[in-house]
Image 1 (cartoon, rainbow, N blue to C red):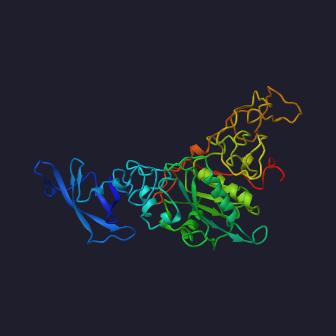
Image 2 (cartoon, helix red, strand yellow):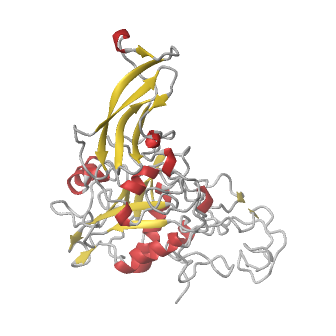
Image 3 (spheres, one colour):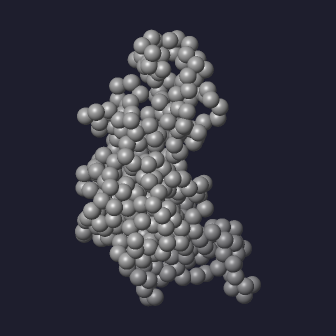
Length: 427
């Protein structure tokens, strides 16, 4: 296993290619006076952000028993994250590149799928991640949006995400009840929708029909390859916004489950509410969430999440009446009561004390047998319906490696059609 890019404190350099399991011919090996076998080699160095320079090298010793000697004590990098152990101070507070506050035994201190060293120094592929506001001690998610513009079906329109939708999605994740190693709460989104500066990756897609013939198929990846900088592979998740997909499906989106590719296709219903919530819904799939949280059982009144078709367009329920509310952009925290469809308490509702007349007969029953989600795809007519804590169960593993390989994907899923469901309250 190779160790990657430890920073040389004081020299502003990083080292490439140190070995913890050295190999060499018998003639290459030497011995110390104490009899320890070692290989003597030169470590190739590069300055932060600069290409390798052949004149920059340090002579070091790599021992057969796993030991290592160097003229600089900051060459050790136990977790191979690209930061020397001496700068990973485990304080939980980032000061600068000489005092990162990160864990020297964890290559991803904040568990967001990005190596600490790349969040501090920039990516190996040349992305200036620090300038984008990423932190090794707070979770970050990077997104690129590419969109279509056309006059298909409903006159001239653009599928480009609006600034309002982008900001609402950012606010939703920033407000997440998820604590980071630096003590802060929330998840930081870096969203590129072609706004300029560092964010010029998001762009209009030209040369293709605005209705994709399939979903995440050859055409999708042909378009992605033409519009997505390969330097972003393994760092950015990718969202394509056509008018429709699957040759004209009315589904609002499609995504990998624990992956990095998604589609948002809102046809002629491209307003801020639907955009923000559908982008959140598809991002939830990329982070491992299903339509029932941990399961595919859908339309559960007590699963208070944008992942639930019941609330995807309407917004989540804020007042315990099991109907969507304005400004209801959120995932579930798993606080709603268990609903047993064979024995429902209408006085308890979904919150435990706020009544809900499930069958609409004007009477609050204590032992009602009623199917609350007949189209939910759950097992049996009368089921046990569970809420789920989405936020604490997000999975950040779904980023491709540098070759494009992605082994984490569990499945792919198409999502609810637009316009919104009848559970949406009048404004």
